[in-house]
Length: 503
Image (cartoon, rainbow, N blue to C red; front, side):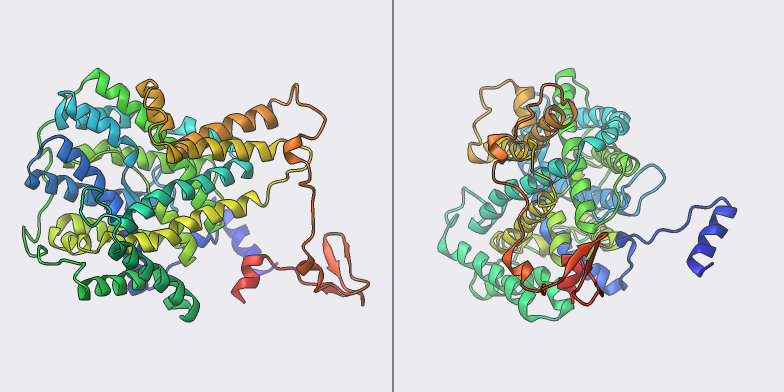
C-alpha cells in the first residue's frame, strides 16, 4: 500500500475525511497574495462605490453621509469576501469570489428612497429580505443538477457579455454628465491601459504576466498623472481613519411594499451569485456541489443581513472578478481573502480609499475589456464541451443568450412591464439564467413530445476534426480503448489544452 492510500486508510480509521488537494486551496506568499488581492480590489472598486453614491444622492444625503455609505460598502464588502473565501461551518463557498454591494438592487432602492420611504426604509427592507433569502438558500442550491454545461456555459458567456457596457462606460470616463465623457483623451487612456495589459502578458515572465492587470493600471495611472488626467489633490481631505458606526444614518424602518420589492431583488441576487459560483468553479477546475452552493448563498445573505447595521446594502458576488481569476490563473481563495482584508482596511482608512478612488475610470475601462471578455471566453469554452447532435442544445444556447442580450441592447425594453417582472429581467444575467434553465427543463428533462427528427437549428453541427489536429498523426496511428496508439504500437500521451499551453 502506498503512502497516499495509507493516509486515506488512517483518516477513515479515525473517522476523518481525507484531505483533498483543491486548486483553490493553494497558498502563496503574503506579498504575492496581497499584490494579487489588490488587483481584485482595483477591478471591483468602481462598482462597489457606485451603488452607495447613487443611492445616497437619490436620498438627498449630504456628502459626509454619502462618504459613510461608501466606507460602509468597502468595510462590509471586505468582511463578506473573507466569509465567502475562508468560510465557517455552513457559510462560505471557499472559492475565490469577491463580494460587494449588489448593483441589482439600485433601481429598487432608488424607488424606495424617492417615494418617501427614505434610506431607513431601504435598510429595513434589506434586513428582512436577506433573512428570507438566508432561509431559502438551501432550496436554491438543490437546483444545481439543472445546471449542465449547456446552462452554465450560456450563463457564463452572458455574464461576460453583459459586463462589456460597464467596461465601455468606464473607458469613456464613467460619468455621463461630465464634459469629457467619451473624449478621445479618456478612450485613448483606456487604449493605453489595454495595450499595456496585452504587452505585459506577452513579454513578461510568469509573475509579470499574472500581475499584468495591476501593473497596467499603475502605469496607466502614472500616464494619467503626467497628462493631467488624474487628480490626487483631494486625497488629504477628510479623516484618515474612521470606524463605520452602527445605525449612523438612523434605525431601520419596515415597510411592506419596500420589503416585497427587495425580496424580488434578493431572488435575482441568489440567481446571479449561484451563476458566479458555478462560473468560478468551472474556471478554477474544482467540484461545486449543492452543499457548496448553499454555503456560498448563505454567506451572501448572512452578510446582507448584517450590512444595514453599518450602513450598507445587499451583498453579492462580483462577476468582473471572476474574469480576473481566469486572466491571471491565480485560483487561490486566500488571494481573494487578502483582497477582502484590503477592503476592510479601506473601509476603516478612508484616506486609502480616496487614493484608490483617484485612479481614473478610463484606466479601469481598458483593463475591464480584457477581464470581461475573458469571462465570456470561459463560457464559450464550456459550451464547446456540449453535445449538439440530435438534440435542441443549440437552440437553448441561442434563445438564452439572445434573451439575455435584450436588456443590454435595449435598456428600456421592460419599462412598461410590472415592476416585479422588470426587476428580474432587467438583468441580462438573470434573464439568460431563467431562460436557459426553463429551456433545458423543457427539452432535456421533460422529453415527452420531443421530435425524433433533428432540429433545423442543429443541422450541420455534427462532429468534425480540425485539419491542424490531423497534422501530428502518422499513417497507422489509431485510437483504441480510450488511448492513442502510434504506428509502432506505443501509447501517445494525451494532455488537456490547458496543460499543453502551460508547457
